[in-house]
Length: 292
Ligand SMILES: NC(=O)c1ccc[n+]([C@@H]2O[C@H](COP(=O)([O-])OP(=O)(O)OC[C@H]3O[C@@H](n4cnc5c(N)ncnc54)[C@H](OP(=O)(O)O)[C@@H]3O)[C@@H](O)[C@H]2O)c1
Image (cartoon, rainbow, N blue to C red):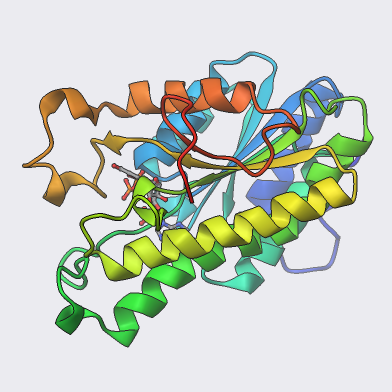
């Protein structure tokens, strides 16, 4: 059992000390068992990410790592952690900062022997008061393109890069097989499909999700070529009632606007059925393939 040590004589931050205690609590309770399924939700402070954490914690054989930009400000995550009997770790990670991703990966490797599920959920469509999706070519800016690409496309691939070795440990051990591989599930969006694009607009968001799909597909092919039981899927959750969609909901029919609880349940059911045969798929909330 690996328990990250707090070295005597070295100044540690409150966050490092808190993390060491969390890890010890996890290791003491789980014994680091390979039968425990470990899921990491990247972008877990609110919206779909927070709901994924809640529903994964409802599965008794799961331990969950929730990452977010500002753990101290994530009150709902902290509250969940208090009720999780040591099954939830909260780790700082900003997906636009490769140093922070590397630090998070090293922390998680210290407390978990393998990872069965990596969910890349963090994403933006707008930033209140600063940035809206472009409705016309004239509104496209370098800033909107860069910000969308940084969070929606670069985030998931850089996070996957740093956590791939932990997923590989599930693949090498007894907890993953071709029929039940370790999974990287990236939250994409139907608007990232080029062949499905009949309306135009939302240039940066659409293109960043298209780029995310291409990067994910490359990763899926590489894992298969290396004969690793790690499957990558890109998921469209439907239009879900969260902060991200809130300004754009007025033209959405009520029956087409999903509650977070429903959307996450549907996506977890899809993830549960992923095999190496479906590696590289781009899937909607109802399990249907979306054309790239
Ligand atoms: N809601 C929908 O209708 C819908 C439809 C299609 C696809 N999606 C996709 O589903 C995913 C989740 O969306 P949502 O509706 O849950 O959005 P949301 O409620 O707006 O939540 C976005 C999450 O992303 C995090 N985030 C933003 N920038 C980050 C960064 N640099 N590093 C780490 N985390 C960051 C936010 O953290 P902070 O709290 O720190 O800001 C927040 O936890 C997104 O990828 C989105 O594109 C959503």
